Image (cartoon, rainbow, N blue to C red; front, side, top):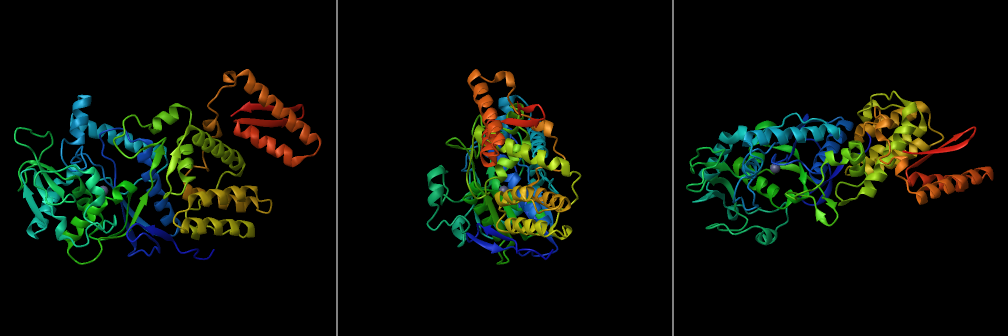
Length: 487
Ligand SMILES: [Zn+2]
């Protein structure tokens, strides 16, 4: 193959699609991680499946990556204004466990979900609580440079001192968006000013607390990402990812404090990538939404985690996705068909990069080019999926070519097509659960299909098969006639 298409991505900083040019031998990539005070819900996981897609795309292009995902186990206040109690402490009180037990428990739950979703492990998962001395040092540097002011409630970053404040969020007037959702803090000069250090209130001693030049307390939430990413990836790095909600506040503040700290006049991070929300009905599944479904709820209901992954990748990361049982059913059915089709091709060759794919079959070369074009066009995973499905139906492709194409597509999609067991993708409904009417409909469709086949009306037969497929019915033609079963 040639070098393929230029990787282009949508940079939130500037809001345009740009060529991705790595700045060095290893691309530093940072993804904002979870606050480990509750189970991650399905909406949370979209951000990590997206970051994983970026990782896989870079691997495909032969770019080496060092990926850091933080674990917030201290410092995330209940309110966006950095006021009120710490999320971790609230959870500990609620569950009658220690803050450390809470952090450990939910960090495990997060890792379990990552593994179930086949997300490539990051190189580092730094815990905020392990970096508090560095955070204090960072804040002290900002104070020495005149970027801060102190209030009884803590040390604040003075956003008026940063002429470029809010560029990422395109905040043209002072904190338009913030004004709506951030409450008043006594003495704060601008609504956009944010806490670098939260000093504990007299008489309200925190569980996790550190001494600092601004009294006993905890670091502000935004601080950890700047401090840990710079510590682990160097002062400047290439890619920062996160959910779209971070684009308006958290990432804006990360940029402001990091550029004030580095003071070298260069943009701190070059490419900012944000995934859209996963919508659950009308409610956005962004944060703190009680009762939002999590991955374990899906697996208990008989879905495979890879079906959820496929559902996510079936939409572009910059589009909102509506999570519905019907959509998940469709994803599981698609996955089942893919695996059934691919199983006879196994074992698949290892093809993790474009350079490793060298088919001599023109149909496979064409399919690989489509896949490369799709991933290069701002991570268009729905198109990769379509290219794979087309290749699997292509009568001109050789078995060897198809193995290469399938392996390549799955190196990018991460569905586990090389190993998934069809039995794990079995249907959720038992035949005994069918109503009489449903059974009747199925029998009629099967009979109509048999008739169409007798009359050699293949389009009609295929159309009925697709209808049955949508009902979760698999038809098998035997010498004694067709049989059917629920998948
Ligand atoms: Zn962050």
